[in-house]
Length: 82
Image (cartoon, rainbow, N blue to C red; front, side):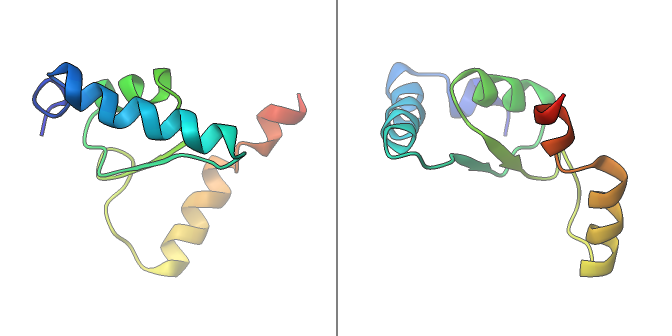
């Protein structure tokens, strides 16, 4: 589903943005699930989603393949330390 369909109306956008604000006030991370394209990932990132998952990033895989992928990509902590 393209973001224009999912987030095409003001009420849909508010449904994403309000919980994000509440979560951040509580020092919680916001996780977006089901991201299928870069456009949606960018939209969600710009509106406060901290973490995303979905077919855009990777298809389902066995645990050992995930660990190998995570090692190749890094955790993101390296960038925060720089």
